[in-house]
Length: 406
Image (cartoon, rainbow, N blue to C red; front, side, top):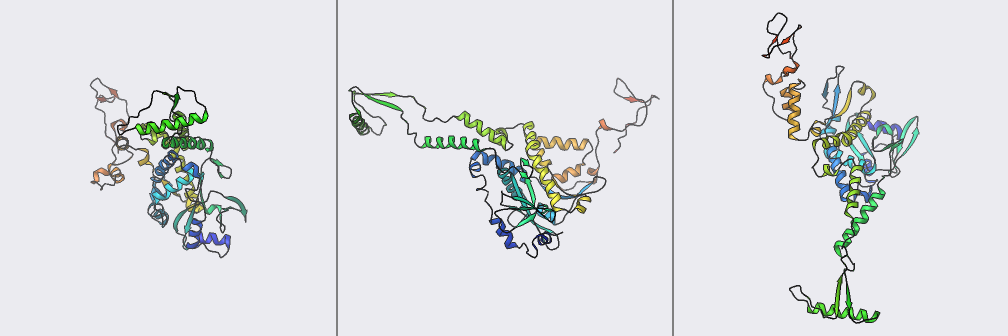
């Protein structure tokens, strides 16, 4: 059933036009206004962008399976929106990167499917709202965004991704306020110190005892004398009646250890580490990052898109949105080489199937055959004895048959 039909069932004849969609997109809060203090920390923005771009690089496709578990891509309007142009403003990579960014910042992200009159999906739009309310109407769950002013939606018509899930969506408040305050304080102090510390670095002592007004007068006299005597070589000259005592104070009170610790905590909060950000993580650390941070969000996207974009009948016929994470999981050339080699000799993929994944032209027909390692060779029934020379014989003393079954 098309989205316009669903919306009119809730609002009568009031249709959602292109103008209303634009007004809806302009009525919420921008990405900068969402968790402004948090997103203005460079390290936090780096971490969020790193995770979001990884999610944005995962292809999503409309897939239909059969009763035997075989799956094939479906080239329809849903797949076009997911793989070619998600909406007039964004392609799939930008769209999912933006959606993931808002999810990490606000813990909730709402996506509006735009359906044509014929029931075909036209576009997906990220709604700029972080506040929402639930209610019931005609036995169905309704979601309302206080800042949209004009629209409520059946919850089944809105794609809702959430982080730190509570009973009614993701937690609407981040648990980073104290960390943000510490980082902002330390970084503001560092900026102030870099401009001018405004701290006493030395004491000027005169041998003649002086009181307040006379002491200030003597200090000004010293500065005039010193600056007058200073020359282009950087040397200055003072009289013998002055003594200068260096206080040996640090010019900056910035506690770098505390700052590094807090930044590390913020990285962990968003599912990354310093090694991942700096591209110094080993293969195990990278695999854990994909499994613990990226994969749960990908699964949630698959589930929500499948449930919200397909009817019960379509889902019963194994229509779903599926992500292809192979390229993300095998990140290095060495890992990809090992992966494809194992797939070939385990008989999981043919060489032409691998060429297809590498966007290479199909090879000769012989490359369509599945290879199999001798370790998986099927033998005929019988008792076998392995001789010293390595040959195999059956109970009649004849050489064993070792034909490989493909």
